[in-house]
Image: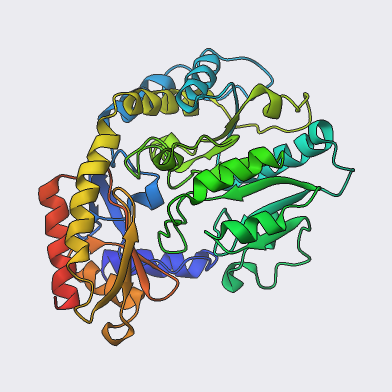
Length: 401
């Protein structure tokens, strides 16, 4: 039995089967490349679902983490620490907001945003207690907690986890008229992904986000943008909402905020919104810990240069130009995306998304399928054009293009 086979066998024997990973066992990684336990190298075209926007083993992020490891890693929020104020100040400035509520995972941040919207609805908007409603879009992916799967339209994520949390209304993604029709007096928020990642990198129609912004302002409803996957450089802007010059009431951030080093997430908003909380009403032992703040501060500093947003724009234009050539050849039905992020719909005659992912694995490229027929491409923003072209050539080989 090989090292790969032993590792996979142990994982399958002793871990709950909540994932169906590709049969590769990674041992080391650097930049856009990963190496398995047998010494084989693979081009990472997934980047941890955008958690690794700055690549594996980024020197700036590792140096920041190492320096903090030698000082203090956790205090809990029972005490102040010397990285917290800078983190909150600089993240708020990056977002053009006033207050930050730090958490750890993306799902925790979404749960926090839901609690924030409900509290704001009762305390500020004046919605009667227990009647707050939040509008979400179909095909959404905001996490897998009990509350979040309650408004999922993915049967696989939702089935057998009831009873479900009430208070959510689902409308078609990108349909502004349906959204407006769903708003009632008790609506406190609209929660959307500016680009739906898990659904297959779905980009809403032009003007949709701007329309949501206008509608929510007019109806005194919070616009919550889940930028956990789409934010922090992935689409060529710091936030995907910027493509329509939109600033939501609330940003939900995660993944790349921790640089692939530690889990860091946050809800960022105005004082009028996040100011509804009082001590004891929400919190997290690890949220905003010194190690997380040190890494996130370096992430913020890197984003301020604009370098990564520019790379995502330029390489993204190249990526979509090359992928567009595959459409109509019988293997690819459609390509969508924004920046260095794409969803590629595989024609059923060519096989499933999983089958294509497995074939790419044998050629040294790592991607992941979603919803059966789609593969997602989201390489680290540090990938070179040469490596990107190498990966695209392998994709053309697999598709017979």
